[in-house]
Image (tube, rainbow, N blue to C red):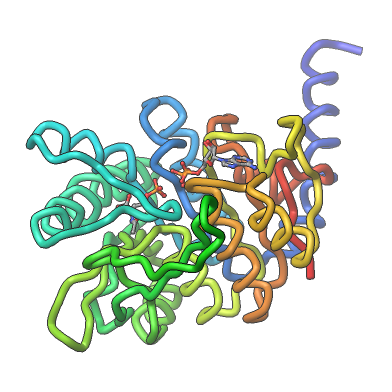
Length: 297
Ligand SMILES: Nc1ncnc2c1ncn2[C@@H]1O[C@H](COP(=O)(O)OP(=O)(O)O)[C@@H](O)[C@H]1O
Ligand SMILES: CC(=O)N[C@@H](CCC(=O)OP(=O)(O)O)C(=O)O
């Protein structure tokens, strides 16, 4: 067999394996949450943008929701403001929310839009404020104090939770062949701007759009057990237990909580996977052995 024939056969074999998966997602909504920790490397960023463009070209309706926690932290540090987190969420005062909006809805959002557009697609950068897409309310979070075992209410300032999602604009964009790239900032009916954890925002969008898949791209292979081994599959009950016993901590808490809520809202499948693996999105959706942790009911 010549080298050219061998390559053609390999490509055909790859295609024939991928095609049934491609058909499975045709005309379906896939929400991809692109975490701040998965960003940073320009080549990886281009590979991510290429995957999103390819999804669109294969008839899938992708919606990107991005984070930018480390990038916000760096900007706050430059301005001499210390980052403080409680339960994986940034304590956000008025000055902080202004910087959060600038970094998320400004620079990061437009960088991702430019990367996808460079792949020949029409991406459009928005946040919850655009088209009355998302309204938020001040987040009401409680936490069990590990020392006293007493539940305490957290005051996180202008941290919001999405309470209303209107998909009119998203549906319009899907019909116009555009790819929405969403920053997790939204207004409240009280006139304030709220900083929403990007995982929570992605879950609310996926729920409202009845997405077929919700993918979380982060900087770890998925949910790890106490021995740092990857857990391939988790039920909702097992996931709750891992948060309770502290195996899941920090930024992984809002992620896993969102997975649980998204499944309860009717999203078919939720996966947490490593966004630092080149073409993680295509591999997850279009190959038999998806990567990461799949959360199931
Ligand atoms: N059980 C766990 N399995 C995997 N990661 C965990 C776990 N518990 C805490 N983490 C932390 O959660 C981080 C991912 O959340 P986060 O930093 O918010 O990422 P992103 O910016 O991608 O949203 C990991 O880098 C890891 O440090
Ligand atoms: C309330 C809250 O914590 N908001 C996040 C929003 C960005 C985010 O979630 O980014 P990642 O996905 O990269 O973590 C923050 O201020 O960092």
